[in-house]
Image 1 (cartoon, helix red, strand yellow):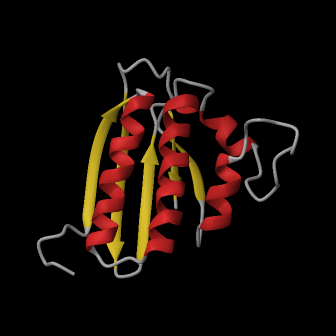
Image 2 (cartoon, one colour):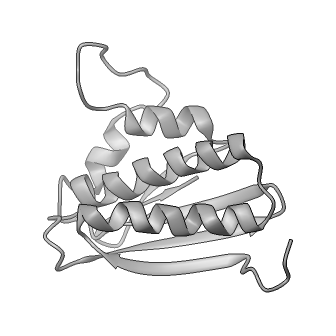
Length: 137
């Protein structure tokens, strides 16, 4: 690993879905610079995408006038990712109402995000913080 590669990344981005892809690419590039292998990078990219997109779609009005805060801490082959939303969408209690360990209805075209994150993560924590919600992977 290059000593110039940050072990902690924190960024705020506007609540627009088009921000998710470039932010995910940046987070994955940091993990790649830390020496993560391709399989781990793919899993991390999926987790980041789901958490970031959920924060915008469900945790905000997704109009670009609010912010989501992301904090990633990398230590060797572990990564802690926190995503804080403003809580103006469905509300933080809706995040806690669903059991992420339960598979979604196969007939539904939505609702797989937290289930995927749960399956790919060592731990998944969800909490109400202030007016919004925080998801930690």
